[in-house]
Amino acid sequence: MNREFLMVVSIVTVLIAIGYLVSTFLTGKSSARFRSLVLLSLSLFWLIQVFIPKFRSDGELVDFAAFLRGSCFSHATVYAYRCYPQVLTPYLRRTSGITGFSGELKFGIDHLPRDIRNRRFPDLTQFINIWKSNQPIVVITTLEKLRHWGSDGLSPGWIIRKGQQYVILANR
Image (cartoon, rainbow, N blue to C red):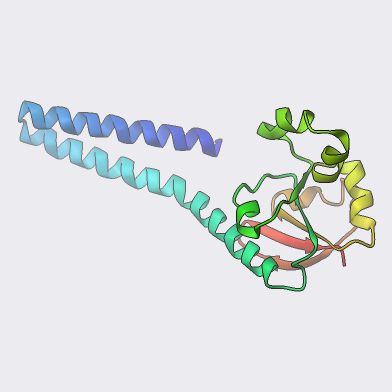
């Protein structure tokens, strides 16, 4: 099931449980209060379980950004491949490119001047040439999206850091 959908359902469930809890306190029925507290506890537990992977992946990206800033790859051009790790850019303290993904960024990308769009948001065909260049390139992607790497025509890179959800590759 879609993670965003689960997050919305979790939040709605917690809000319903809070509403039920308030109504039971207003009516004064102790057995209903107990049921509402149990419902609220279970819905909060579910909400936490749904949100924990999001917090873990964001924390992993923060660690990756700190690693890149303090490594020999600190001046390499950074791209995200087939994903949009939103927290990456602020923690890198510089811009990064994205290839193979547009999603919610599509409208803005389409309105950029062509030279900026090709540099910051190259399509996969353009990115193959960037990856093969002599310029040091670092790519961050999810382990799931890494499976598409070879079928997209990209030559193997060096895995320089691997987490539970993300991986960093370098071309040099």
